[in-house]
Length: 484
Image (tube, rainbow, N blue to C red; front, side, top):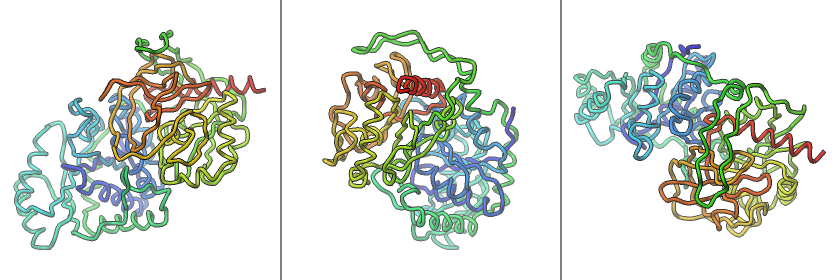
């Protein structure tokens, strides 16, 4: 099945040029016209999609050629954009900046080529005039397979400044599709890992998105932008579907030996049928302001594997959802809400009790901190025999990982790609049975596997390995049967 949804990729020469303002403003402006707008973000970022969702009323989805593989970018896009009138894809970093040492892989340019989508270049023009033409010409000619369909000039100081910029760009062959004046920063405050998530400041975030939309409506040619999007044409290939991914996903790569790890077992074979699960099998997923990092496809895969996915808020709920037989705790900012999380002792005890029962628990990054004995000296769940604390150093980057220990997510020796993004430290960094072996930037093991618990700093995207969701739900079934 092919996708013919009109689409634009919003890119920039570098970070800080105004991509998020323009992309989110465009999403909101087109949505206010009654269009169904599908929001997407290049790369592993969890925070921008929250603003995109607020702008469009639809789930913000990531397109990451490193985490998921280039072959899944178009199918995942088509899945998210199904039935929409327009898709807007916000890029990451500079247009041609990809995974370190991997060429164009996972760059905005790479994703634009995979989507056969025109690119709109957002240029910070605050400190230049005629030089803008050289910059735009360089980006437009660098890779002939990347089509720069237009430019939006940001932080323009005056009508005179705009005139100089337009005159310089007349000879470039790249049309000016918008000019945004230099104004006070739209209210999107940042913190130690980027923008403050929508869930933490919903009222202010609504106002910020409205301001972005107003700025874009006033300064951009929406008709010309929509015409450019319609010129993208059909995108051939399949549309990703969680149930089909579970049924027809190929077996994972052959296991590889891990120094110091368990002996690899034969690879997990994917069944070509929907797993049989008891009615009412519940997998609880942490949400709320403290746990905002999650990919929509994870819940979709769990549901396709037969689980009833229910969300709970560790800041407010004192009990896990009734009947919970599996627990997923993703990323977020528990360090910001440490006192509140610690004060919710009934829920901390419920989580510890569930883990002690052997039920599957999958925790990533923030989830790892929450399962530890303490975070910055405040008691947490005590599931993992480790302590966590804030750190000045930012740990950031893609990772190639190998499962060291057999767990509810993967068999020892299975390969996965992931992403680390945190300013915290867990001591010790790995348990007796580590979760992952990482190759770069330093060879090391990290994370914890014990009973049904898999806790690690590594963020992964399960669409790249649907068997993870099936394996997790099957372990939930087994745990339920044992408990019953």
